[in-house]
Image (cartoon, rainbow, N blue to C red; front, side, top):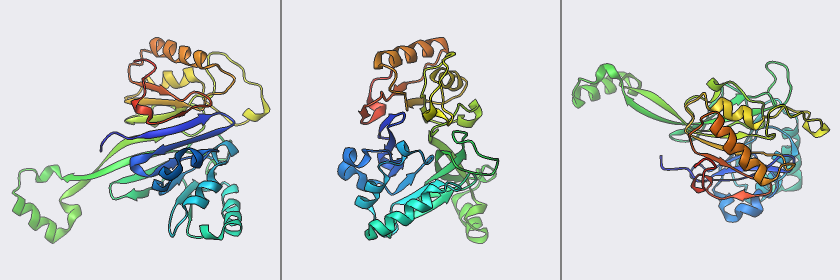
Length: 293
């Protein structure tokens, strides 16, 4: 697959959304997504919501009203979040033309096929405190699939392989190979390195800068990541590119950038690291200048 074009806005408490152009995916739907993307939003076929905080949902109603058609968009949301069925019911009363939208509850273990060779896998995170088995907050992995010849058939002729396929079916001659081309953490405390191992591009929140900083604020009752923890975790993985967002607006841009550079040096993180500063939309993030480049 060619390089992905990722555009996003992500400021803690205010709005978060990421648009993946080539895949027709929107991760979260914070305020301003439609006003920013304009006609580009028509490319979006699937919306993957991480949780029901208003800064991740504020733009959903307008986006849906502008883009709903029969069978699209497909809005995937954490299975046990009560806000989503309420939103679905409200939108269908308020905007009858959105009746074609598909609202889909999802949970870890599901696989949502969005293209012939692309599927999305939800994974639980711990942003919203919930009992085991109760799914209210999710991250997502985007997987590219392809089929390759079974190793045990490598020495056979094409004619022999064709005959086996005709007699025993496609599954008898090929196996599926999966490649994790993109992952989105959603809002979450930092997970272990194994969670994101083999991810080519990781979009991860970094609400707070880290160290021993103590956060006392009623709006922060759910759990978030600190930048230092994210950098340390990623340094123990083979992630190829890192996009950081959801910084608190309490920090000045210079403070965020200085912290990223310092921590990349401390943890010897040499992969390209990009960031979205509070209040800024970044178009085609992966073509911007890496902070540690």
